[in-house]
Amino acid sequence: MARQSQIKSNLKNRSILAASLIATAASMFVVSSAEATRRYDPMSLKPGSESIAASGGTVNIANIYSEVILPGNPLPGTGPIIDIDGLEFGAFSGDNTLDFSASETDPAGSIGISFSVSEASNGTPGGAVATEKALITSGHASDVFDTRLSGNIYSALGGTPATGSAPIKFLDESAYNFLPGDDNDGFERSQFKASAIVRVLPIYFAKEGSGQTGNQILLTPVGVVTPGLFANGTALGLAATDIIDGLSVWDLGTPGTLDVNTDLVVFSLRIGSPSLPSATTGGANLYVSDFDGTFLLWASAANIGLLATDEIDALDVFAIPEPTALALIAFAAIPMLRRRRA
Ligand SMILES: [Ca+2]
Ligand SMILES: [Ca+2]
Ligand SMILES: [Ca+2]
Image 1 (spheres, rainbow, N blue to C red):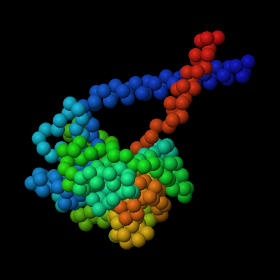
Image 2: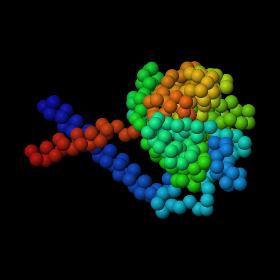
Image 3: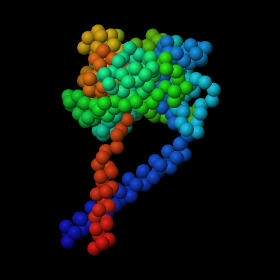
Image 4: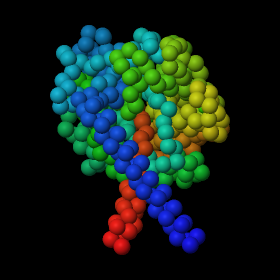
């Protein structure tokens, strides 16, 4: 009897879980329908990008641009649309926003990355990056590529680097009214603003300029325009002249405060940074830290379809739904069907 009631309880829990998963999927569908003609994947540009000259200087490397062109959503005029002016988060005219991040979620789950490379990068022969480079000169540098990695952030912190799948092209620069001669050097999938004016997410970023050393992570909370220091290079185990050029932050523990051994970061360094394996390699390696004063390899260039001499200059992470979530729905449905037949 106890066993039976345990089974019933399990069935009930599975039904609740299934209903909850279906409801979640349904609500996602409603949101995506409402947003079907708009999407924001904020992006910033590297100095020297083609759009800067083409715009007569209104495209600023401190600013963050977004609003992706989708069917039914042509962007007005030419050129990209500013999502967050640099002045709104503490990157001034002349500063270069190196990369930026919202606070990521689900560090224990399966993970994918979006990245962009520098113009000098070649990618593994035959891979997505090499293919884009062959199509149009420097067109690969303004694109965004996706790959998925094995394990999760904690397995990397435990000393097991991830392996990745072959990258695929996720976004073309034309989706932003950017030009093929642009070089995207900052990317994030999160939507920082709920409207054109109100930023609803804190922004974590690295920049160069205004005396800022590129080995630090700054944080501009919601409601203010002045950044504070979230983590210095020492917390990451970085040298004074290392440059972070790809960044994703999990601000766990107390939001807005650095919690050593709890908060997490994955990052890439610019080629030439003294902490890399050599003066000409390592720029496409990804590293992980929990701010304990050291960092570990998360994935090497070769594991994400890139060459050791390539450069990742923009980085974001995203959660990949576990196959088990879908399996659970099916698993929950089977006993319900069986019971009905009985
Ligand atoms: Ca790039
Ligand atoms: Ca924290
Ligand atoms: Ca890099």
